[in-house]
Image (cartoon, rainbow over all chains, first blue to last red; front, top):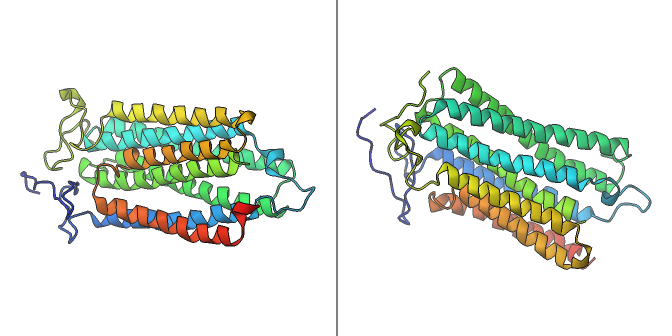
Length: 211
Length: 118
């Protein structure tokens, strides 16, 4: 790899961006992996849009007398879960900032913290589901149950996948296989992680707070 | 395993190590302290959301207030933590295209089922 790094490429609009060192040139001047991740996240908007719309469509359509959101939601509990996930976005971005400046020890600390916060969120969600089931709300109880578990379950699966990716990065870093030159890998996982966070921001408001 | 190394090969990404007193990892990205400040703002908005939820006097205004607060949180995370404010416009276009497409498609679906007029 050359010791003299090429100047930061500039796209058609004149905005500067970063290509990882040693990355082969691309027609856009941007990292293909990052372009692909953003395109994937754009498509994920459609997936979660479908699930959120289904929830809204079935809202209030369950048979009378069956369990409803007001009966089961615990807003203070879910608020704490939301706060935990929100703070994991901070620790994720700190992990990225640290690997970009070559501080691998702090990168590992923040990656592990993010994974722990994410796992706490998923654990909280599993606990919430068990409480709901104990109170009589299952996937097949009514339209509310089906659409609620489908939406929050898909989100929880995304968070779980994110936690696994974070633990993989932590493991790679421990083995010394995550050098500064591979900071983009952390950035890509970070983009995914922030995405599941923003999806939860929408779910928390639309599903829990606006009843 | 190298600790606190400075790569001279990472182009514009790497500037200095913490030992050298540097906090900036990219000319366009915020410092750690700025990220913490953004997180404090996000936490404050979340607290406001929860407090507003318990104010019964707001009536129908509650939905509008919660929507505004939620959109603010969404935008802050996307612009600051996901770096869309600093990165190439192509990334912004890819994401916003998906987002707008989802809003239009599902907006039409929900409208055709009369969700807003229930």
